[in-house]
Image 1: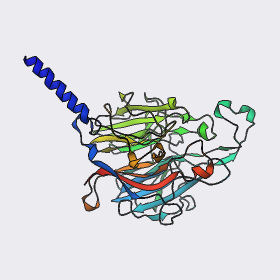
Image 2: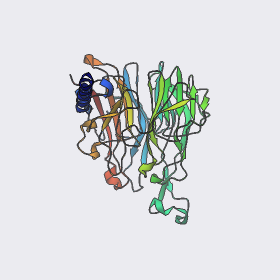
Image 3: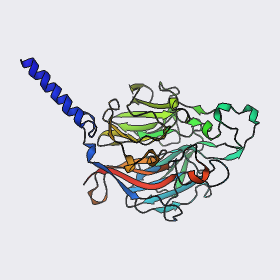
Image 4: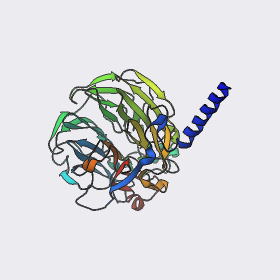
Length: 401
């Protein structure tokens, strides 16, 4: 009789847990049903008081200010996927409402070359930028006879990016110091970086442009490097156990450095990852899960909020994923929403945006996630349509008051 009561009690607990699982974080975590999306600043084109719509940008928080740095905007020209590459730095003193331009064009100022799909992190009193690429469209330099037919029609123009492995740092976004012009890790974009245990860490990424934009022979990395200040680098491992990739998210939580997802190509969903790995020293890695629950995808972002990983956004075929997933340990994941950015359709979902968790702010704001800009372009729309599918909006994901 006692055993029957125990079984019934356990079943009741399971039923209760399952009935609330969709709205709440896993393992009794915070109730993410109490979180909401607030648009802090809408997308605005041709506003000189705001950074242009863009993707592949970076955002950091330093000295209680928010900074947005560089990125890529599509250009409305006859050249497919022609891009404007930024070298600007903007600052907000009021959590993303108003912005001031600090640096108009780093390359013209004799500083770092304009770039996108790089990394920016903070350590101590400095913000650092690492790696990245530009986008240079050139007439196709080879005959169509060598163009792989599986990539579609032979293009008139191809993208021939320069890739970077320099490191720069600044305390204010205006004055920059070059820490190294050529780090020992190969030049790359889509790299992952973090500040962890008093060091800067760089890993993964790719070199050469993707076939989807006319590139060939893209090379992927699974090496891991660290540095005290960005000037001298050491290899933790030149071949980590996870598959080489670009666009992986790196986060610090509970004394571990985590790597979540990524991609090894954009046109085939089989080339997308949703695995999770972690390490304490950059050399020895352990697999947390080979399937995090959320669909494999490129261009997604994750952050740590309320002691949970929170992941959303990204590129999908045939449509971008409309979901938000949370996990306390990186192994067990639960979906808590179908509407990041208050999305109504997959067209409202962006990728290659950036994300920050801000621990507090004006008016007693509770720890919140902020997102910046992003891309809603596809490979299948004409340039005059794609031109308007990048954003410069700012959103906040936070508990309801």
